[in-house]
Length: 173
Image: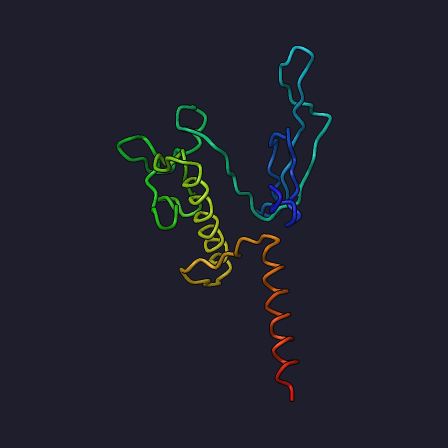
């Protein structure tokens, strides 16, 4: 989560999606309402507390199994295999529906959190490729993802720079 914070990702805990706003056939924003707990511990949605975020695209990413009838119904256009999970191209996480991607638990393949996270990364690249293709851009098939960054990377840069300066000073003439 720290890496996401460094990238200035906004976390909106306890928000439930309420509406997707469309103008001229395009997504323009998405509305959320806050969820809260009453004194008995029961969760409820507070319609008086809403948040609207501007958006061009909406990517639904959540952990789920196909035991929930609402999830099964929402996936109706996606072709399922004999085990009742989506047929997924393992190299791209795409389904038979061009704009639907699946991985992790719902695809029935990942057995660990690490595998599920990797499915998400692969799906993210495929989603990027799909969106770019709608604008006529070909980004190729090889994922170009940013490297994971840690503070040790700053030490490496400093050390490399220091060594280069020292070598130049010693051999400058």
